[in-house]
Length: 79
Image (cartoon, rainbow, N blue to C red):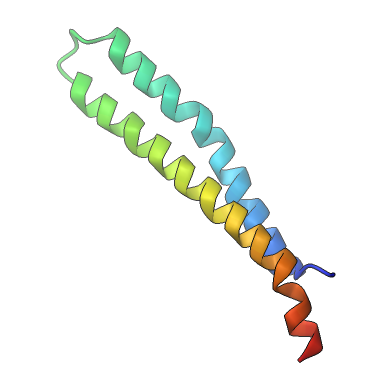
């Protein structure tokens, strides 16, 4: 069972892109909740939520890409 190396590396890039966003998103959300009196509170909160959702998307995309490279890699070699 050999993995398709290019697809596997693409999945690792997705996961490595999601890693910093997984920390940045909640920090921004927490910062916005601590500064509710700031007039830009709602915009910072929305930005943090968007970053957190994008991090979850990249995490899902990376996991599915790695899984695809592991289990669909042997189909390419038999053809």
